[in-house]
Image (tube, rainbow, N blue to C red):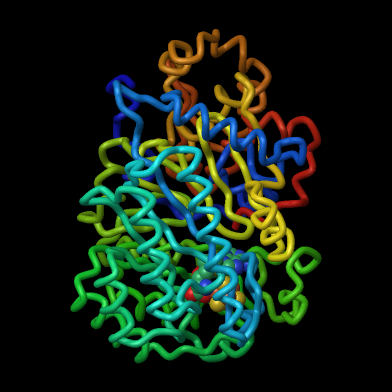
Amino acid sequence: MNAAALAPSAFLQPLPLVDQDVLGKLNVNGPRYTSYPTADRFVEAFGPDHYSLALAQRADGAGAIGGGIAPLSIYVHIPFCESVCYYCACNKVVTRHHEKAVEYLQALRREIDMHVAQLGRGQAVSQLHLGGGTPTFLSDEQIEQLFGWLREAFRFVPGGEYSIEVDPRTVDGDRLARLAAIGFNRLSLGIQDFDPLVQQAVHRVQSFESVAKLMKAARDSGFESINMDLIYGLPRQTPQGFDRTLVQVSALKPDRIALYAYAHLPARFKPQRRIDASQLPPAADKVLMLSRAIRQFRAVGYDYIGMDHFALPTDPLAVARRQGRLHRNFQGYSTHPDSDLIGLGVSAIGRVGAHYSQNAKTLDEYYDALQRGIFPVVRGLSLSRDDLVRRAVIMAIMCQGRVDIESIELAYLVDFRKYFAYEIEQLAPLVEQGLVEMEPDGIRVTPMGWYFVRAVAMVFDRHLQADQATERFSRII
Ligand SMILES: C[S@@+](CC[C@H](N)C(=O)[O-])C[C@H]1O[C@@H](n2cnc3c(N)ncnc32)[C@H](O)[C@@H]1O
Ligand code: SF4
């Protein structure tokens, strides 16, 4: 990467307020590019045998970088939730029957053992994320047991990032202290909005006071980084009401903030059918909520990392951002280089070498595969050379806000301007709208363009070009 690629990019400059005309033209549906190709492109032709082969290649050293294999990331999906939030688009099983977790943990154990059989015991791990669903649906003892199995199977390196998603309604200060003692050093709290009217409309009521108490307890327990998830675009949300939430969140000073645009896809996510569409805020209000959130969080000292993420300047994510070391994986922005990701649990996504894989989405299918002794992988994708080049370009746009033409040419042995002649043509309207700048040796996203970085990335997505079926994604804003 040359010096220009490290030059301050769009999001280090003051962000302008987004222009309504530009919004009208660009508020198209688009993927979030936590991977390229995106998960909806995975195919059923990729199954357990392909996954097994990818692991075997890794075991043989195909993932070696500079003489060693980069430490693994592990994602574990815990699907259970006690009650349903109407907006939720996650893979979950709503139940009050906690005994269901016992069978699930046994299945996870089998899945871990199968990985050990394939990779060997003691592979280094530098990132663990327990997501859901609600990981804290499990008891402390069950979480400890799960962490114990993972520790027996893998070697967790000191200084790694070990995080857990926490629904604030399911924990108290003691539970948080226990999670820290088990080995987690990062927390992600699902907040969404503190406005009681919004909370009722989405069936998720949790007071600001209870969350403030948890924040203090989490700090006292020594968690190194605390993230809060917020959503704008929820039913009954107004810019005024959301302003109050922004001030309340600022007062709690989480290290990171994820601010998601509400993805309303009731045809795909059944609980969303309980949302009265007439209560959803209009597009203009959503833009206002987003731009005020950006202004507010920046005013109280957060760096805008990109897309949905903010971080305090001292947080490793903000440091990585400044140093041009940002990466993107299925959990969003990350400080860790492209390490292989092992996805465990129902619906979990993994990436080993140049192969993506996804586990069965239903518990029955997941259990069935493991009982038969095969990996529960039901879809995936082996990346072609073209996928790899485009992935590099799209990730450079999403993470650095700039594509350095020469580094892509050198890494992938292509003549960039020839290879992407069609895409460069497609960028012209974005250049005209002031969202992108063409430089002699690169392509740069402007501060205004940073609001629409997905739209810039989409130009390079061959799969979108192929079918233009963009209605499957949620709105960018
Ligand atoms: C997988 S959920 C798990 C969090 C945890 N169960 C909780 O509720 O606190 C992670 C985050 O996804 C976000 N999310 C869920 N459904 C969404 C939707 N339809 N649109 C945008 N964000 C959504 C929420 O911010 C949520 O906190
Ligand atoms: S937001 Fe969290 S708690 Fe609510 S239904 Fe989704 S996964 Fe479960």
